[in-house]
Amino acid sequence: MHAMAIMTPSPPVCAALSVVAAASVAWWLLHRHPRKPLLEEPVEGDQELLEGESHLLLRMAPAINTVTFYEGDAGAAAAHLRVRVAEVVGANPWLAGRLARGSNSRVRLSWQCVPSARSEACFGEAEAAAALLDPAVPYEELVRGLSLRFSVPPGSACVSAQLAPSLYRVTVVRSPAGSGSGSGSSTSGRFAVVVSLSHMVADGATFYALYGMLSSAGGGARSLIVARHREYSEDVKAALGEQAGDGMLRCGDDSGDWLTSAGAMLGIARTLLLERAPRVLQAAVPEAWVANEKAKEALRRQVMGEKTPTFVSTNDLLTSALMTLTGCQVGLMAVNFRGRLPPLSSDWAGNYGSVVAYRGEQDFGSSSHIRRSLQRPGGGVRRVHGERPLPGFAASLAARVTLVTSWATFHSDLILPKAALKHHLPLVDPVTVPMTHCAFIFRPRAGCLAVLVLSHSLTQSQLEQALSA
Image (cartoon, rainbow, N blue to C red):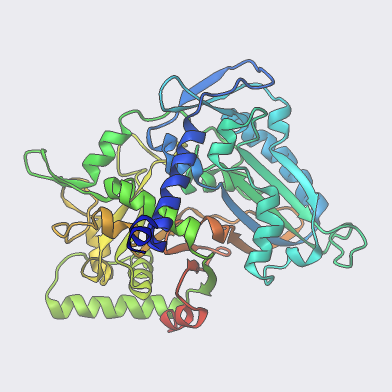
């Protein structure tokens, strides 16, 4: 009995072993010898991706997907988008490119500079059930019916595929003719536009830069800078620290190192493999709530005699509120480094973002602390109470982590001819969420603000109450 008890692994040990085994299999699949593609194409452009873009996190990450709902003439919208997508891909031919493993651990992006069958595949038209063209349909049904059908595959699938899929795809979805919605032939029916972009080659800022080019009200297609800023990895390490007066880096922030640490990565694997899919929660952010929270924070700073920061943004307020509401041990806020690190500007395509990690409510309990973390000396980005270390290996395995990312900053409405925009929405498959809680701040349309929260513990009523004016 005692011998059997010693030799038989306990359930937690079995779970840990399964996580390690799954991670090992994933590593082998991503690093095995590359196969030669079935069809060779002439290469006219080639770019090695950044170190972070070749990391396991982005290789396994799903594409960035959104759906925008309309009422109007789907045919006119499709005709416009077919031409505009061709112009966008013509200005940015890397969107129709291929991903392949390089001689080292980096992934390479290659493309042709002339139109090809691959660039034509970036646009499509499809039919779906009329119910899927209504933003009020349950979110999980939207994911199954739209995202899983029309999304670009994850980076690992794009790299390993012998017939590499497109990295960018725009699809006009309407219901079958005669289905009752009228969108198959009428000029007043419902339809949707699904836009998908591989996260391995671009982040949310690049996604919405391309998204805005599709609009009939925008400035049209323009070329983004696809060449990678090779000093970015070192520059962002410096930005995630504090600069002394002599310009020397005194204390590097451990946010990025923690996220890619063995403990955090195994914690992500545990969440994906052993936890049930999170609940999907959505709520509008009332203007009255924003005004009230800003007034309360200004009063708090006055009472406490705090002279900085001089303001807090809506994003600061929401980040603090969402992290506090989820009761997380570690809060992660996505930060875009365009405009923070020269020469990066909004014209640079790629993944030029990172995260700031906050350790408990002493860091994220106040929106002023969020703002101060973005205004550190020397242009750095670092949590206010950096002296408190992030969880170690053992604690990271089961740490409650909340990720907050804002897409609202980059948003512009996708205006289409003879159509009225009704609702814009991120499409995120709940089963791919790697954290305990993930929150997306977005704009359903210009002038409106909302949050999409995928959570393992929150309820819809808790979210709505937290954002009630």
